[in-house]
Every structure is written in C-alpha cells, then in structure tokens.
Amino acid sequence: MEIKSKPHSTAKSLNVTEAATAFSALGSEQRLEILSALVRAGPTGLSMGTLGERSGVTGSTLTHHLKILHAAGLCDQTKQGRSIVCAAVAYEMVGGLSHYLLQHCCADAEEMNQ
Image (cartoon, rainbow, N blue to C red; front, side):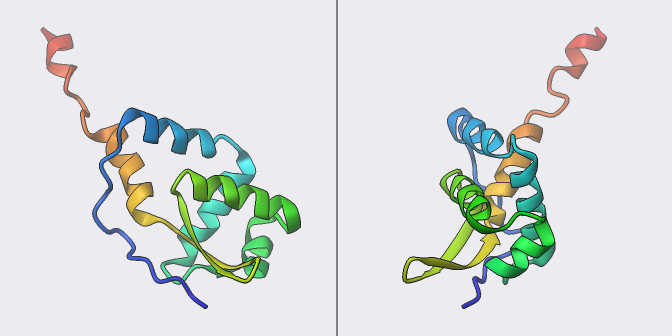
C-alpha cells in the first residue's frame, strides 16, 4: 500500500489562486510538520501510524490536516475502504510553490539600482 510519487519531478505551473490555496494550507504549524515529515520520508510516503509518530499529530486531528493538505494538492493518499492507509508528498505541487515564488526572482532588481 505504498504511494510512489516522483521526488523532484518537474514543478507544476501555478496560478495565483492555486498558490494562495496551497500557502493557506501551510498556515498551520501542525500541517507544516506533517508535510515536512512526508518530504523527509520520500516518494513511498508513510502509513498513518508512522506519520502520526513522526509529526506528533495523531488521530482525527491528523486526518483533518491531511484532508486540508490533500485538497490543496500538497499530498497524495491511498485509501482502503474508508481509511487512509498511506500518504506521500505531492512533489510536483510543492515544487510548483517554490517555482511560483522564485519565477520572477530579481526581475525588478535592475530597475531599483538605476
């Protein structure tokens, strides 16, 4: 029951709405801890139990936060029946957030130096 996503795959091109939704989902310390645990775990993801241990968030709180991260496109999930069995970071989306912030890096710097 492992999710296999590609680490460091090409970044998704995000529009401002998608970026704002994803950044909003990361506006919680617990969700940031969960996503960080998934990034550290790599492309196979983690079982719910292991994710809870590593992130310090368990039970229905973990399920709630994963739902928000998933809705923002930041993680993928494998379900068995009504239970989430495994979660993994959505590398393309996380890369897209970095790209969104840096795509115009220093574009105005020359104007400011004139």
